[in-house]
Length: 96
Image (cartoon, rainbow, N blue to C red):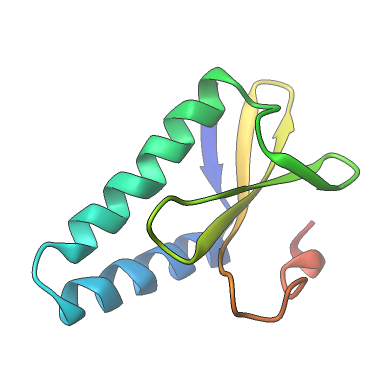
């Protein structure tokens, strides 16, 4: 399965990673690990996440207040957003 990040999702991921690393050395690496653990699980079990819209799912990260919004199209796992749980719930809808 191919992993594709929407450019804005990549930016969200990078900003969160930087934020956590500034907060505490090594915390950014833990965030990265949580994201990649979730992505690896989704690559194996793509329908694992909760369906939030037709063809759109989400999975909540462990330990961090973030969720991955994604879609599976053919053999591609497309990450639409790396969304903070306290952010406006559906701000990413225009990316679909």
